[in-house]
Amino acid sequence: MSDTDAPVLLSREGAVAWIRFNRPAVLNALDEPTAAALRAACQTVADDAGKVDGVRCLVLAGNGRGFMAGGDVGRFHDDPAAAPAVATAIIDHLHAALRLLDGLETPVLASVHGPVAGAGMSLACAADLCIAADDALFTTAYARLGTSPDGSGTHALPRLVGMRRAMELALLSERVKAEEALRLGLVNRVVPAADLVSETRALAERLAAGPTRAFAATRRLLRQSWTATLDEQLDAERAAFQGCAATDDFREGVSAFLGKRAPLFHGR
Image 1: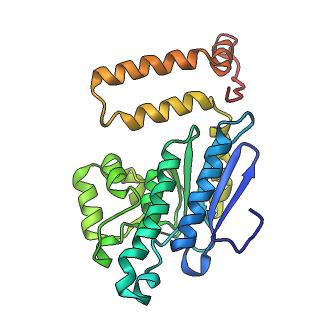
Image 2: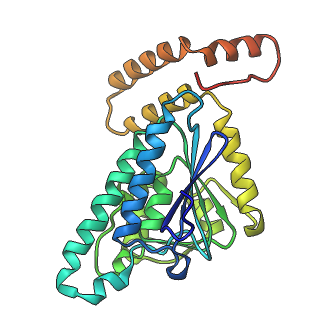
């Protein structure tokens, strides 16, 4: 997208796609157009990811002073009677986007700073990996508004931090600083705010240079493990390994290992 005024910007740096929320004046709060634009951007990435020389890593980030402050509360205040319909419109697009992210064949990396609240926290938790600036501040926020979470927050939180801690985060809506988020398992890394973009780019490029098919299989296996029996998971692991063993990347990995050199994967 070239329109810098769009609520969501989609760009490409080599094999890495960036989706940037772009409503900095309202801390990237989600309204209907923003949620719809996020869904469209995710669809574009999903369509591209399966192509030769397609996207091999997706980064979610936010412009301005924060990643995302959640839903645009002003939209609910303007016409209280219309609040359920407005919420439905936003959530339907958001959840469609999350389904697309879940089904991607590539890793999803959240790069967060400043406020990471409500739907913003849900999105950060839904990503495969999350790198946070040291100024990031997390809160579920929903209880403060008198509502329950959306954006897959109730699915991701217990898996990341355990049920008891998830209940605390959701019910009390307390603010969690970056270092505490790291300790809890909400994020993978905390870096100085000034280094967030460069550190994100380095991690995204590392993921994009990896064995994309193997990453896709690993994502599916880990995500389905919560509902699969041991027998089902063992069968799925066997099938996934067989599929990976037929790829060019596997052959390259074996050759590199035996040759005592770094592998050069091409995502095929």
